[in-house]
Length: 142
Image (cartoon, rainbow, N blue to C red; front, side, top):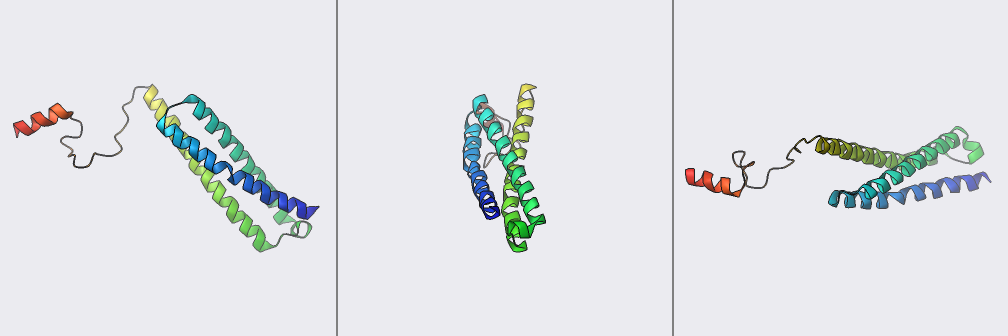
């Protein structure tokens, strides 16, 4: 019975890892189109991902406290914790991404001009905010 519980933990870990590609796909889609439905799907999957990680952590902590009962060596517990830490890190990245999206959406809603993230190659600080006609005029003036 307890061995079965350990196997369930590994199956649940795999099930949780399986959410990563779908979340990443939706985030990629969100970057291309600003769609509330996509954001809803991302939010739903992230909540599911977060809940599963919390449950896995609780179960692993319990198994590590009772290694004889669960037939779990210290090395195996550490290995599982490392695997779980990777999911914790991914979850943190997703949360930061969602916070950034919400911040950007608030700025856009408030009418703030988005900060240019990168200057176009070959563009000088002098020309970065000029349109094509203004650049031509600047060239003529020089």
